[in-house]
Amino acid sequence: MQAKPVSPPSRLVIATRASRLALWQAEHVRGRLAQLYPQCEVSLLEMTTRGDQILDRTLSKVGGKGLFVKELETALLDGRADLAVHSLKDVPVDLTLPFALTAVMQREDPRDALVSGQVDDLAKLPAGAVVGTSSLRREAQIRASYPHLEVKPLRGNLDTRLGKLDRGEYAAIILAAAGLQRLGLASRIRAYLSPEQSLPSAGQGALGIEVMAERADLRQWLAPLECAESSLCTLAERTVSAELGGSCQVPLAAYAQLRDGVLNLRGLVAQPDGKTVIRAQASGAPEQAQALGRQVAAQLLDQGAREILAALLPGHPASSPPGQGPAAG
Ligand SMILES: NCc1[nH]cc(CCC(=O)O)c1CC(=O)O
Image (cartoon, rainbow, N blue to C red):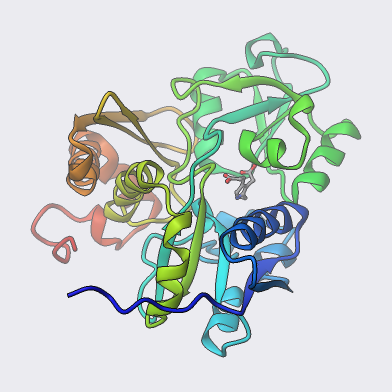
């Protein structure tokens, strides 16, 4: 039986954070929707989230899970907005009913980027030079490769972070290439870090659209925004995070690529000081995205991630020996 066709929407409201990057992303979705549904009036509902307000501490210490997402979800719940646009890497892996991640859009550049007034390579910085990032994932990978550098926290939106670099507080900073490119700031990028140098975060560079799961109408309207390849790659990546507990208090990276019909997934767990870095990878059919994610997570745990997680997150299920945690879902 065919699904009953729904008439196109006459009005859609997009919930978004009010940062310049978030607004660019929401406008991007608005543009796509305007093309698909020319009769539809699409507007933005700008919101400030806890993640935007807390600037004095690193998010990992605040317990960052969903900090950029929660407020937008209240707008979906009470009907002020129909959809929320997120950077996928900020969307918790345990997002669950009544909400649903309904579309992952085509991923742009997933890489981390080096921004600096001084060098185009971290290796060229003198001992003790200060590198800015608040991501434990970036910090651990920098410390592992460049133990002579100092890593200091760097918070705030993109403009704030670049301002701090320009005022000389850091010799270099690391940011997601996608954010800089979206805001027309690609000229600030001095070098792109390869996945070998800095394995990206699960979902980095992709946008995710969240709705109330019950809105079947919306899910049908938004389906054309979905990118099958980005969806499979980020599903594999997010499965790694989910299996390892999905915390941003752990240096954790996962990056998948689809090439010639084969999905290749890499994962990494590290100690924040970079003294131990554990890597795993697996390849298979794209339909196996979730299985590959579980496989990479299991390899990481077996190779020592379990001890790292146990030290960083005492009592977490992923840190207990096999068989003692809850069944993986
Ligand atoms: N954690 C904040 C955040 N969330 C998404 C991006 C960049 C855009 C993206 O990855 O899609 C950034 C900034 C950064 O990491 O430099």
